Length: 340
Image 1 (cartoon, rainbow, N blue to C red):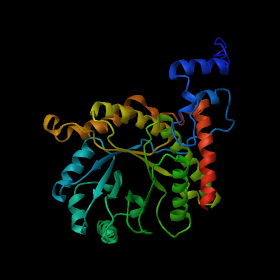
Image 2 (cartoon, one colour; image 1 turned 180 degrees about the vertical axis):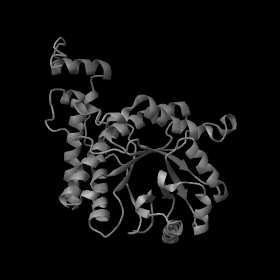
Image 3 (cartoon, helix red, strand yellow; image 1 turned 180 degrees about the horizontal axis):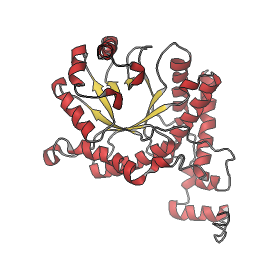
């Protein structure tokens, strides 16, 4: 196996740059994909990272999250059961009003909560968020469920609740290393410096660039592992990362292709959950459930046909990705230290 590539000619950097100029244009070096990172493949071609950043952990299989925007609570239970029957393993339910304990009972009737992941995504700030959280806990207690045995999280909660799992959301700007540093800072504050029971959970917006989307997950998990290790907190070292993506293309078929590359890069980077907005297929032509089914099936095909999660770290060994991850890691760490 050591002589596998002996018949292939070594390509010098100059020849590699010539190929890139032919394919991408002579000005490819002046086209950074994001502030502070060049994404120049030629620069990394002859530069090997000795200790590349590796995937720390990943849910296997990753959670396939169905986003649900309930029109009314009366139909929500049927929508949930249909989504779960269609292969969703996680639910992201948008919350715009207070639920009573009885509402929780109605919504999750016949749902085995221990087998799925629940995300409560609050769409706006309100003074009833704390009451919603308390009602959720009362619902759990009244059904003899153990809170620490459930997979769940609250997103965009308008107050800091130490009794439930809270997501940290990442602002998406053109400064990816500053964004990731802010996430780490918030995680440290929420998890390591308080008495909160929350698990470390982060919701990241997907990046259009395949490689940045991959390395943002890889680097974030790596740095959080090191930070928690420094605090001697082994129980919270493994970070759960959710990748969120919304429709950016007018054509749903084009968006399906975009979701596919987002899913592949996210899972290779170590993402634990993918939460995609339903493709915008015309409901009058295709029916009300078609878009949800196709959106989920993008991930089903990848899980069951490509088996990409079977490889622990498919990207390690790529000079370009290893260098990009190493560069981003250094910049994020420098930004994080400034915040401390």
